[in-house]
Length: 330
Ligand code: GUN
Image (cartoon, rainbow, N blue to C red):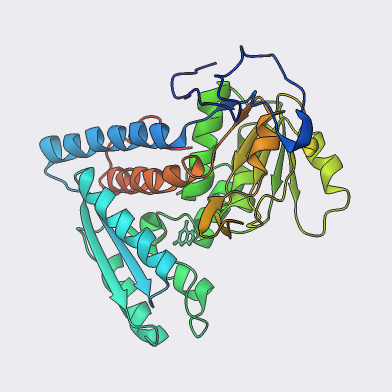
């Protein structure tokens, strides 16, 4: 097992992590002793971006090719604007070309499709991402499926979904890819483990389940209609929480020593005023039982953009018939 990317943290009691394998009991009055190893997604994402940067430099030096990523944003959703800005900045930081297209919220579908067609045919663009969700008048499926599968760095095109589902080489959705990388790094192999994915979205839940299955996990997809969810979760060696409901999973649903990957990013109001970010699991109580856990923020979130950059350099390498970067694909 690798532990290089794991950061010890102060517990609510101010002490450091106990030795691996020691599980402390719940403290009184809702205070918990932290026993889980914290999987540091921020540090891991920095190493992934570093590997991307090395490969980009090689593509430039050896072949005169600069990978290019185009991001399309329709409308002015504040959260999407933040993501898009951050993607643009990090794309440039790893040495790639970054192109942003910001379209009016009322943009007709035909105009968006024409832009995608232009990007599909632009030899300097190797990756295309259309930020979701799209305004209601636009057909999301139609738009996604108009992106060339080879440039679909989100891995949402039906061709890529089908390739992933049949275990073939594809573009893999960024958030699940980031989760898989962290699991592989932490466990070495996850073969034979019981994995429960809570959430069945096309962006995270379904591709995550496929990736876990491809790595020989026994996979359950749970969702809002699942009966006895806590019993299902309690059987899991790996829990992926991707429901978008703040702190929905309490520690007493978690099997001792399980690995908890929290995909949720929810902003909630603090009792003393202001807001804070929380995940889909109750961090404190889950960290008192789990063997390893990703924090929010600083866990899965940074890995998503790092994997977008990884997918872009992979797409660029494939488009030019060159060797793919190692360790950056599923
Ligand atoms: N909106 C939220 N997550 C994503 C993502 O991974 N890709 C795109 N295109 N839009 C998103």
